[in-house]
Amino acid sequence: MLHRLTTHNDQIPLHPSTLTRFHSRAPPAISISDYLRRIVKYASVENVCLLILLIYIDRMCERNRGFTISSLTVHRFVIVGVCCASKALCDSYLTNTMYAKVGGISTKELNILEIEFLFLIDWNLAANVETLQNYYVNLVKQVCSH
Image (tube, rainbow, N blue to C red):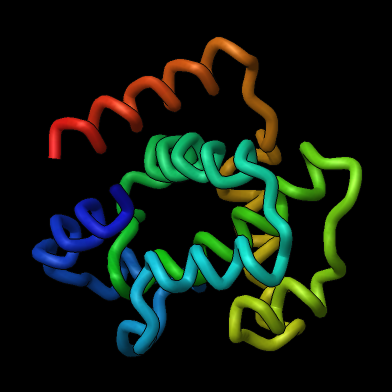
């Protein structure tokens, strides 16, 4: 789903007014699928943290109309989203230094992105069970239809 979303959004022209801290100069060499596999492998991420990323994308885009998940933003968004979701939803999580290492960015950059992310989604890191179930059902439907 993230691949389809980024492919679609990559067609939208960039404007200086829509650039964020999440934008990279060029798309990272690693695909988003491989990046997610890497994060799951080395950060022992719980499934709920991956699912809630979809909710975070919607929250971010609702509050920040110019923001899109594209090949320039998706990697940074995912690593900071996983970092924040793990802290908010899980009993155990890694340090920012470890998330940064797994994500291929500096700890300083992750710290800056984390603060930016939290303000941009208004510190709304949780979701109720019904919302999570709805996102899960919709995700499964989309995967099955493609």
